Amino acid sequence: MSVGAAKSLGSVAPTQSYTAFVTPSVINVSSPPGGATSPIATVNVTGTGAPYTYSWVKVSGAPITIDNDSSDRVTFSAQISNGTLQQSVWRVTVQDNATNTVTADVSVNFEFLFDS
Image (cartoon, rainbow, N blue to C red; front, top):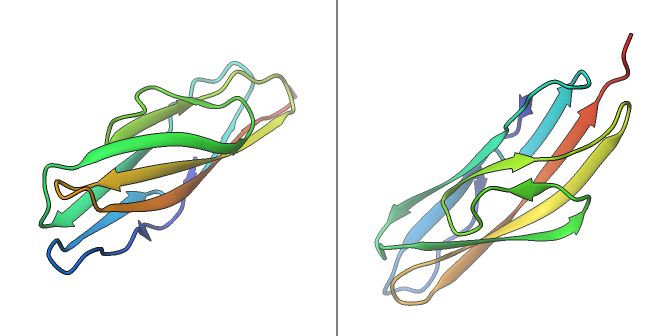
């Protein structure tokens, strides 16, 4: 599995200052057929405005799923067959206690390789 760099979601509202990062911002998973993979993305928030809420939605792409769409840490999974590539884009929205929000997209790519 290769991992992309952190992605800043930005800062909001002068009265509430926080920044959130999703790591990784790109997830690429290559596995032999039948191989088990559980790639994870984590939202890290620094600054004021806690507690934070999290909401993940699939923006586009293949039937890749996550285990908890209201968590700061999610695990992606996909059911795909030999030699196929499944791609999707997910968006996380982080909201602070003053209802300010920031968002970021995460690209998830699953590829299962042919049997040799």
